[in-house]
Length: 93
Image (tube, rainbow, N blue to C red):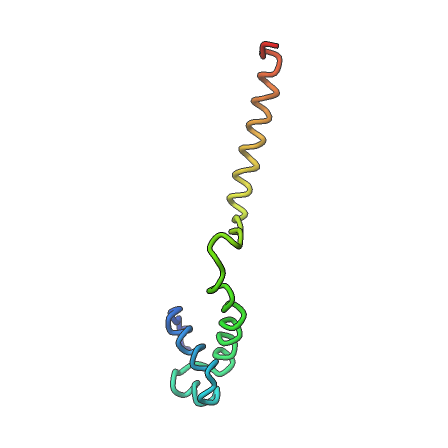
């Protein structure tokens, strides 16, 4: 049984770009690069779908926070609320 191949992003981009240009059929590309035609089609589709991101300005799309960051921020908010409520009776009015 063969171990799965792991291709670099540069290799995937190169194969996808060649597929986008449509100079050869997917079966011929598959033979040249040693990758299954379905995989080449998947890389090509992903490249076309994400191509617009290359032309976006850096600040135009907000970065998505990971779930761990959100959980950490929620914990901090809870801590601050508890501290505020605890210290409320001692505040000078």
